[in-house]
Image: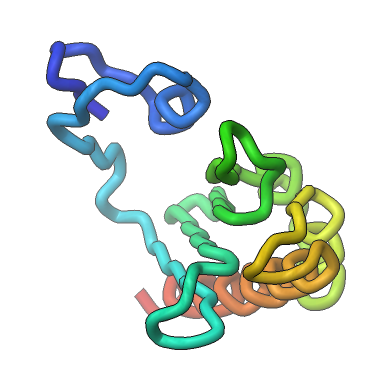
Length: 138
């Protein structure tokens, strides 16, 4: 991202920094990525329980990102990337379990710890399968 002060920073560095500067531009390094995301809510106007996104490039490199499933920092969960899970070539129940084991959600009005682990694993597994199908069809 390019900030209003001209500085360029990585999204993860920006998220992990407590001081926020105005974002002027979002730079997408590879526009040929196949990406898909999903926001889990209990109702159309409900609070997001889990927000999940995956991407796969032409070489098969994966990115898995989640929000709503990390320990609270200053009262809110921060988006996380599951780098360890990305490097494994898991599918189905093995991927679900790896995602559930890699996150540390906190219980709140949106759901309990086990529910958030379960739903994050299921959603990432579904998104990964759909994203891989889209890559193969392209």
